[in-house]
Amino acid sequence: MLQGIEVYCEQYGIYGKIDTFDTKKNLLTERKKKIKVIYDGYIFQLYAQYFCLKEMGYKVDKLKLYSMDDNKSYPIELPENDLEMLGKFETLIDSLKNFSLDSEFLPNINKCRNCIYRNLCDYSLC
Ligand code: SF4
Image (cartoon, rainbow, N blue to C red; front, side):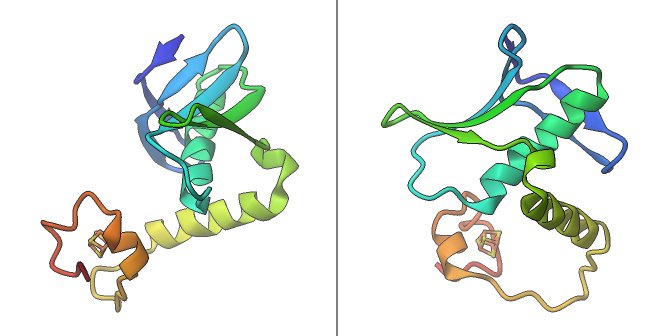
């Protein structure tokens, strides 16, 4: 079981740490305290880890979100089997790469409510 290892993907220019990867089951899992809604961002987190691991030579067959408080698992399709989500992921990566601090920013109160940075953030709506 690999946990918290640093990973990098040249194709998308992203790096970070994975959550947990079971090398026997080839299963990549992203744990959350409690999942009430499967946000696109959760899936993109898995995709980012997936592409990094693959590029680093690991075989990843399955993706899963895991909600710890209620012990629920949510299997997620591999990106190549969900081209709509893959397209959204790539669009997001492009927009992050082309982000300008001068561009207009409109916060979303639903995101601010759950944001761990809200006490530090000048844009927070909460
Ligand atoms: S608190 Fe700030 S960083 Fe967090 S979601 Fe709101 S605007 Fe974004």
